[in-house]
Image (tube, rainbow, N blue to C red; front, side, top):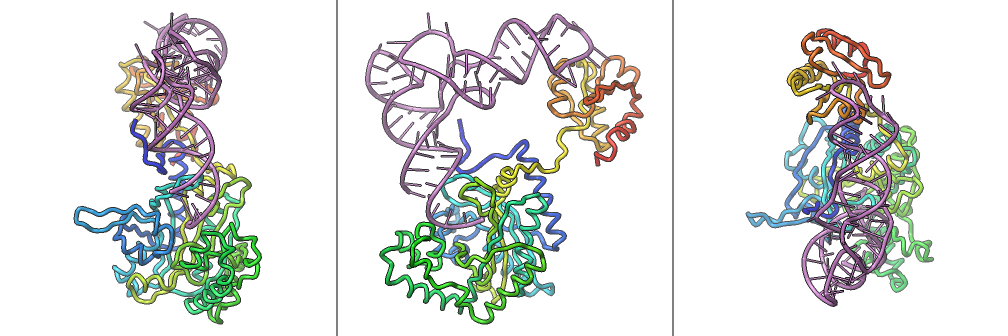
Amino acid sequence: MIQKPKGTYDVNGEYGKKILYIEKIISALMEKYNYQYFRTPIFEASELFHRGVGESTDIVSKETYNFVDRGKRDMTLRPEGTAGIVRSFIENKMYGDATQPIKAWYYGPMYRYEQPQSGRFREFYQFGVEVLGTNDPISDAEIISIPVTLYRLLGLKEIKVKINSLGDSESRATYRDALVNHFKPHLGILCEDCQKRYEVNPLRILDCKVDADKEIMQHAPVMIDYLNEESKNHFKQVQAYLDVLEIDYEVNPNLVRGLDYYTNTVFEVEAAVEGFGSQNVLCGGGRYNNLVETIGGPAVPATGFAIGMERLITALDFEKITLEEDNGIDVYVIPVTEAEKSYALYLTQTLRLNGFKVDMDYLDRNVKSNFKQADRLNAKFAIIIGEEEMKNKELTIKNNITHEEFKIEEIYVVNFLDEKLGEEHV
RNA sequence: GCGAUGUUGGUGAAGUGGUUAACACGGUAGAUUGUGGUUCUAUUAUGCGUCGGUUCGACUCCGAUACGUCGCCCCA
């Protein structure tokens, strides 16, 4: 048997309904926030991610799906969405648009070659947002408010927002030096991974779980003390605006994030449900004021986030949230014998065009089995068509819930169903 | 990349080195050839992830591999 590739999954049935429902909520929400929809290629020149996301990040250095195409170009399946959006922003010279900032949202699959586990796939979907062209702390707060609002709309309660500031380039450099000086004499007692982090990206030592309890971690310099005035003010204002938006958050000085491009505000939204597992970061993001320039555009400040769809759905399951969905169909049409099949098809189509959710028998089942099928499909009504009905154009309609039975002339069926089903159908 | 664990029908699953792979649900047909969701009867895996090995013989033992699940790392 041919199996699906490792770390991928098929969507169908209930899961499919759920996904479509969430997608609808997301696009409606983005409309209210007035963001424009972006769609960029799933593969890009590998260089984009090397320069954009950063050589020192795991997702680029050891998790990319890359290939050389027939024209000998080095391509990579996108491991995240921001780099593509920024590339598109630059290539379309959107920094010159009259309307600023550019507020973009995207939704689609991302690819990372990792060991799959709970809440983690090799092909996974992200919904993300980027605001390009402003350094206003209001945009930082707004960015944080989007996932929070989405989670609220979907009914998630057990979530926690964590924020931190990495400062601008200047503050970050000073802090980096301070960290290096702090850890240098004690390198030996740090774990193997941290030794590497020390070389590549010392900030990452801070969120190491292995070394978290060691004493030198307790005394490590704290980023916030190294922020220059400007960065400090920026962070303060972000917090003030979050208060205005009535968003609960926790400042976590050890929140660092794994992608190289972040500056100033960074944040994560965690699932705080008991037993969720280790992949509990539902959403991550922050400001990246140097990225546009790094990729080859002008110096444009920007901020954004990404939400993992699979984790979002897992979180909904964990909180036992069932989304508002109308399960089941309005009418199931049952031809008694083959002679009534064509008429049943005609009736089915007529009702569909009148706005009802309708299905019919495709397998020449007997009436008994068809009633079972109607139950399985959660049909509210069953219409039985036999010789008599077809001849007299008077249909037998049975309410599947109350078991009431009606004889209705064909021309009044739509009226009848409208009345019975009320406003439910659209 | 490292570690743990699993893989039996449409589904949930039991099971043993040896002729017909338990049970339940579901499906199909019938008892009731136009009315169901109760009951009864029959039927429903020549096959136990894949490939190789041990054996007179393996679904059951061994090895490899694929995929699943769960950790680590990292991330959404």
